[in-house]
Amino acid sequence: MTALYILAIIALAIIVLVSKGVKIIPQSETQVIERLGRYDRTLASGLNIILPFIDRPREICTRISYQAANGKTYAMIKATNKIDLREQVYDFPKQSVITKDNVVTEINALLYFQIMDPVKAVYEIDNLPNAIEKLTQTTLRNVVGELELDESLTSRDIINSKLRTVLDEATNKWGVKVNRVELQDITPPDSVRDAMEQQMQAERSRRAEILRAEGEKQSAILQSEGEKQSLINQAEAHKQSQILKAQGEAQAKILQADAEAQAIARVAEAVRQSQTDPASYLLATKYIATLKEMVNGKDSKTVYIPYEATGILGSLGGIKDIFKN
Image (tube, rainbow, N blue to C red; front, side, top):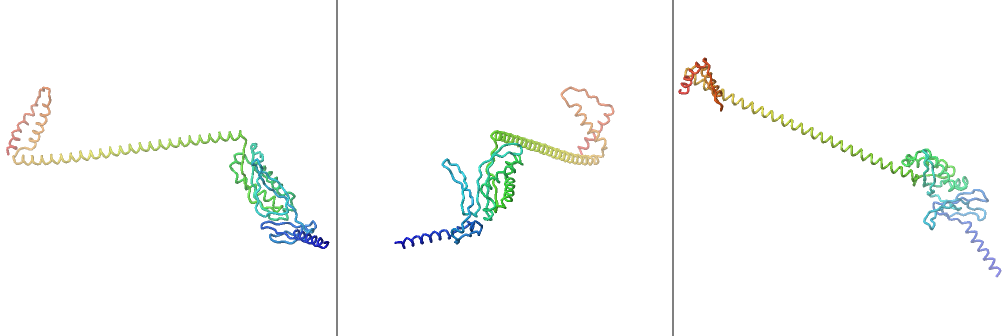
């Protein structure tokens, strides 16, 4: 019976020694092993053998987020002997920051970092999550404090870049690589938000007035251009009309002159054949036309014929002879 107890104790001791001496490390995790209180080695992922009660893993602080019953998310820091080598995200709570123009605003940020050297993360800093959080908060105050409120609202990329550069340099000693820093919310006071809303509405109204004025200006320009083109077209049409009219009158005068020339030629030929003085014939015809105009009209007129004109009347007999021939 005693032998059975001894065997059971030995088996239990072996189990305890195996459980303490065999370490299975998951992928992307590691452990820092100390031997008798001094750093010995860093375990890789997979199966590892250590000396029980002589070798032990060194604990490190880590930050864990959890959701409470009220729906809010809280973070707590606890000790663990496993070091996560994956990229981690810290969501920091809102903090009050004073801008360059003395406006108190609330800002919260996201920090993406990765432990690159587990030994430095364990021995160079006591509480790594708390140190990263406090460093991020102070750096955020310094960066935002150099900018005015309008610049901080419109220059998130600049703030993120500055924060990442400063934090990466500061945490390099701790074996940590800061990959990205993202600002989530920038919340100015209610009075400032109301003023910004009024300013935005005024700016929109100003832009609307400018656009309306530009539209009216373009409309007036187009209307004036249309009126100008209309006047040009009217003037061009009037010009073409006058040119065509003048050409028609000129053509009519040419035709009339040709007709008169042919008539005169024929009369001259008839006068020549009748052996009558052509000058007397022409004077007689003009005289007759003039007399017709003188006696034409409704009112009674007294017509006086000059004495010299009686000689012209004698040529009428010559005209009679011409038509007789």
